[in-house]
Amino acid sequence: MDEIFMYIFNERNCPFINWIDNIVKLLNSIFGDVSQGFTQVPAEFREGKIVYNKAVWDLEKISSFQNGSIKPNSKELIDEVKSRVERYGNNTVEFLYTGKWKNPYSKTETFLSSSISAELEDMGNEDLYRLKVTFYQIDNWFSLYCKPLTESSELIKRSQKSIWNITPSGLIIPLQEKLIANRNMLFDISLNLIDDLSPLALCIAFTEVFFNKKLNLLTTQSISLSKEGEKLPILLYFKEKVGILHKGEKTVEIDKSFTIKTKKGFSVHINPDYFK
Image 1 (cartoon, one colour):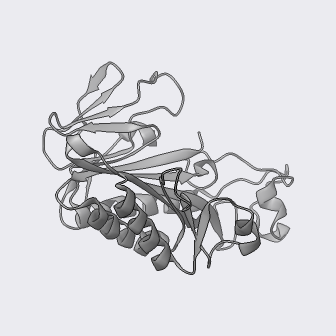
Image 2: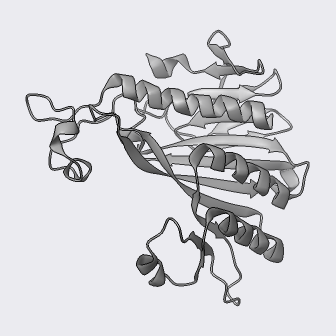
């Protein structure tokens, strides 16, 4: 398991292009510059599906890519992707960010780069917009039990040996306080997005999630609960009070005794099983 998802479902009450603009500006303030954007382009057109940010990518590497466009900065990249969405009537667009999380294996204050993709979708007849944010390489910065590393690991070989938290047996193990800081940062991002966007639903999960607006029902993939790591979402928010969660063939009532509040006072439910 090396990725975690954040899903946001919102009312489809403005043009898709405007929603893209609002969401991307918000995500930029959280995750920094966009490194690349993707939108579908008909095969008969010369324009590429991917637009690269010149300030982030190695130009020699980009020159070998086919059907790509290069823009000088994040803003122009976003504008170019939006213009293609308008021209071709696309209902899905994706942006890639480079996140920075506390390096839990380091004794000093260093950071890990980990790709973050944000997929925005107009769900059409469901009268919904969906934002799916995927955080990669969570086994190195987020998981409660980040796997130990060895000195032969690529991550370790790229930096000075003196910064790593090495045990007498030679294993590099994570510092719990940094793992907690990373998890808290992701939770804080979620709470701020709830305040800023007032979504119908938001969750952080280890699997694909779907939302039925009419039933106010959040559905995860049908995966056996017995599989390690395949638990219910670890954080869950519903705008309406009747939200229930459905996993596979099992309907689960939300345990409302484990909640935290956003700055605006919205209640967010935490899955206590994740912290046992």
